[in-house]
Image (tube, rainbow, N blue to C red; front, side, top):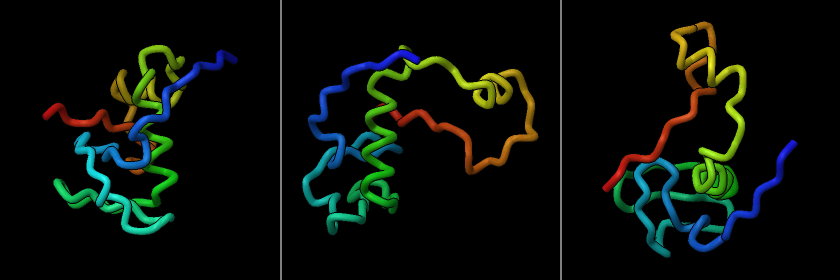
Length: 87
């Protein structure tokens, strides 16, 4: 298993869906709410997606992701990875 260093800057303030960065996105220590798109999520989960997104091209594609890209729709939709929108 490969391990990659990811610079942590703004991973807790950046929306993992739309990419908007704002200090006010962090409502509490455990809640993230984007001021731009309204996405609400656990703050740690949101930061984890941001860390994964920073080096997604260097992370080996999981079997589930490969199946989705090949058209297999047997995978639950909530398990899909969504790439952030570019602003």
